[in-house]
Every structure is written in C-alpha cells, then in structure tokens.
Length: 243
Image (cartoon, rainbow, N blue to C red; front, side, top):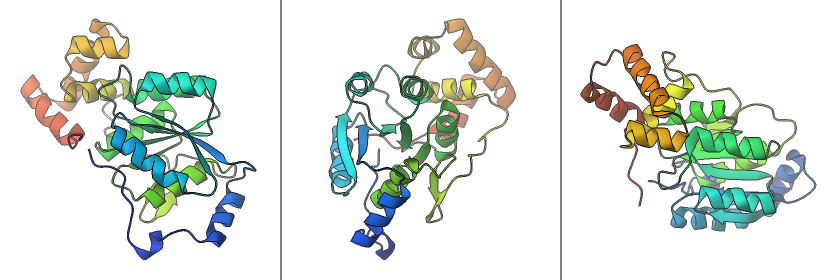
C-alpha cells in the first residue's frame, strides 16, 4: 500500500506564515484543530501524524491502528477531524460500515477517508457512507493539509476532494450505475478474498442477504461465473499490497 507522500514541487513548498494565518481565518475556527488518524499500518499512521504535527493549527490527539481503539478513544476525547483509511482488512469493521458508525456516534466530526484502492469506487462509497472528503494515498501531504482545513471551514459545503491541483466540492459520480452501494461493498470484500460467509460476518448481515447481493450484482454485470466475476473485481477493486 503506498502512503500519502510529500511533494517536492514549488507549489507544495513549506507553507509561509502568511498562508498559515490565512488558513486559520478561512477555517472558521478559533481553536486548534483536533485530529485523529487511523491506519492499520503503524508506519503510515506515525508518518502522517509527524507531518501534521508540524502545522501551526493542528493537534494530533489519536494515532490508532485499530478501528475499535479509535472508537473508544474518540468517546473519551472527541476530535474535529478523523483521517481514516477506507481499507482495514485486518480489522473487524472498515469501509462503508465503519464510516457510518463514526458518523452515527460523531455527527459533527469531519471524516476524511484515504485509500490506495480504486479511486472511483472508494470515493463514491465513502461519499454515500457520510464521509466529508476523500484523498488517494498517492496525494502529497500538503494536499491533505488543505483538505483537513477545508473540512473545518463552516463556509464550505460539499464532499471535499482534490483534483487537478485544486479543492473540488462536486459530489462523486456513481462508478457503475448498475450496482447499489450494498452490492459494491459486498463485491469489494469478495475482491479481498473473503467468502460469502466471511462477508456476512464482517457486515453483520445474513449469509442469504450477502448471497443475494452477489447474485444480483453478477446478473447486472452480465458475468455468469466466479471466474468472470474475479476478472471484473481485479479491474475495479485491485490495489497495491500493503507493507
């Protein structure tokens, strides 16, 4: 899994004091932004945290590698922004279900998702689940700073992404209008090698329900067998292996 990496281009150079003050004014907040970070790879969590700590208006409150730990810690010490990896295969919950859980327990907290997976599917799923914004892990770290600050700006309304060198507030388009969000989520987990039984346990849905989602998705996609489905999943959901 590739990490969000710093940019060496001039436009992403160290932020000047003037720009820092401008962002503080734009954020619409009069306190430091409290941030929680979740990634099941400790190197990524600590690396992103180290970069964000250098920002003059950020406080890194939680750096977790477990989704359950993050939920517990946010209950004790709430944050303004949670930066959450969408794909957490080592955890009991991730993706759409975890974002919905965060949103339910912390309705006012901004949730920024980041991922090394297929951008269109992940971005749309995060949007529908209630996230505030999305970035691929290939994005430069200064871009992440921009998105976090935008998520705290009371004057900004919309799903935040960063495209073509600028912030974008346009809701993402459905990557495949033939599929429902539930079907996309089931296919995402199947693409990671989970069986129908394992998907059922992970999503807390009956095996019959998961099988129905899989069967309907295959019918919509026009794939007749598991081999054809595997080829579709490789194209749509394949992602780099983690460290």
